[in-house]
Image 1 (tube, rainbow, N blue to C red):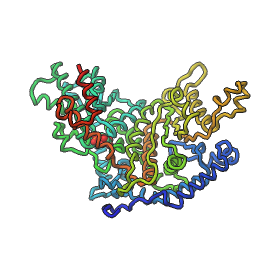
Image 2 (cartoon, rainbow, N blue to C red):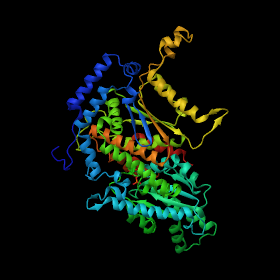
Image 3 (cartoon, protein in one colour):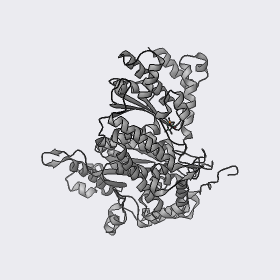
Image 4 (cartoon, rainbow, N blue to C red):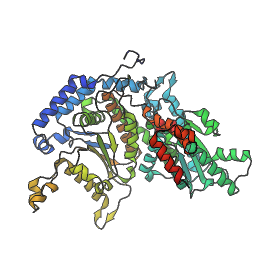
Length: 567
Ligand code: F6P
């Protein structure tokens, strides 16, 4: 592009490369040869071994994907053709690969050990030193809250953290808190408020004791409408409730003391934090080079450090870092992180499958699909490339899912006999809550379901097998399963902080790989801006006729309904 100002090389159009063309021809050949997973497994006894991979805590079986050795080779070649490795190295080195915001993309610096990797100077700043300075403050603060040496204004110890944030300032922490609840050992519970819907705040504060509550306001910008509205509401609730109990009086000094003891903030905008009345001592910063949806391992994870303790958070960071190192150093053909991203491209652009299910067979991961939706869809739901030119192929995947086995009784029908939906199954060999139903180990019952689903999806059930069960002929088609439904199995030892860090870093880098092939800046989010602007223009129209008349006919009619029916 003539006026593309960045020193970051413009994206390579993957669709115009010989490697893309080779993948097209390869797909035609697979189709013509009647590719089936059953046949692939029969023909190649080494298939599982060749398509198995390991990270420190996670084992991967990619053998039930619709790929051959040749597909893997061609996908790795496509990665090289779009300079995936060079772009990865640019990202890790702090180059401004977020071109539309002219920013570095350095979530990997959040988990670099201070001693191992040395300095990382980016834009004149030693990122790793800064990260560790904030981590040290977070750990010291969390230790005070956890030990009870930090007290509320009336002298009581903190029992509940109310974390206020939205999007990346909420989804990561709430997902990780749910995932690691068995490790919450200090008797401190966390509640997360995100929605601007007053119901959210009302339900989360209804039975809350203000004297034992610590509020964390988490916002990268400290300007987000939802978070700032909820933060003001929380301040009013806390001060009002403390006054009602006689824990503070009506003076400004009393209110300031209460805020000092009950409010802390996490933000890149420390000036606005201080304007809100929060003591700079109680503010934990991060940096513009951390995207909101990539920030759970920054100070955004403060609620986790309080609930789980600094050591668990260190394990979490080390899980991320192990995957960063692996991703940065493993050749593409054996790099499961890169391959999972490239195989997703195979499904989206070649097999035309626009959605991707993530199915955790672990109740503690029940918020993981929601977290991944922001990570992947806010990152790659775009049609313009990082140099301002239009995307040249389909981009983005609709990520969705639900914890197993609940999903089995809801939408699996469609995955088995309806559309093709590539799916990642995630399970763990160990549970923190073993249980028996008579002689039956319930966790094994659960794992049996995970394995049964991936087997049924891959290998299906033929008409002859259905007939052999004595099914009436006209019913046979309805009871057949076509198989060839692709899945990846991620089997971990146990869901602890290290494994969770690995899992998150895995999907962060999968998102990067897909974005690189499509030529996207996966680190901006301009698509959320228009709605924010319009909400500001429309809200006055509930009461103001002039603002109402400026709206389109549909919006006017909906507001008329509201005006007529509000009580
Ligand atoms: O509206 C989208 C978004 O900008 C996300 O990218 C971000 O995670 C979220 O809003 C919250 O932003 P902040 O942390 O600045 O409050």
